[in-house]
Amino acid sequence: MENEQEIADYIRNKVWSGFYDEDEIAQIVSDTYFDGTPGDAGLIEGVINREFEKKRIAEKSWPAETDYDRLNRVFSTLEGLNILVLENAGFTFTDGLEDVAEAWYGCGGEDSSIVGYCFYHGQDLAGVVESGELCLAFGDILSADKMIGIAGDGGDGPKSRTRAIEVG
Image (cartoon, rainbow, N blue to C red; front, side, top):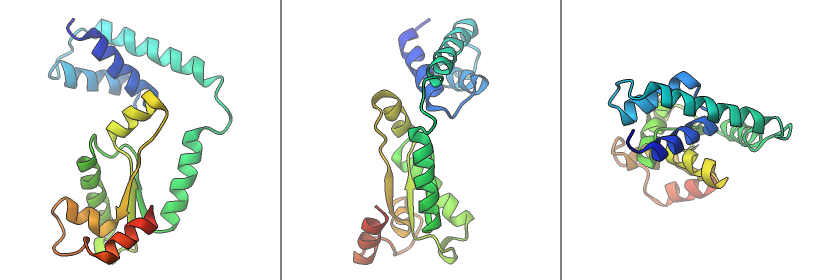
């Protein structure tokens, strides 16, 4: 099979991210590397099973409160401050902004009390699996909306920059 190491690394990243189960990862790998066809299903399943077993073993030594638990506590606090929080929002920064805008409109848009956003996307998630460091995107909700070309005239003035700093 072509790109075996690349596929194995991709699977490892998906497993350790904590967002996907075995079947979801198999489907994602199939869609990404084999245009939705099963590909080498036996090999893929073996790699997925081995990575989940490694993760289950590692989890036994994890502390009672993990970094993810602390992140969730911070995100809950942010939500209480009218900051829209998204995890694993798309794959890129732009995807994340689109997810933010969609969620914001789903909450009522300008009629909501949301003032800012904070998220990480799939590339950030891959990075944290590799390095242990998570990058977060944040800012004034109106600037997120404008950055992806949805809002009319809001989001780039001094008030927006000040709010982005406050959100950060």
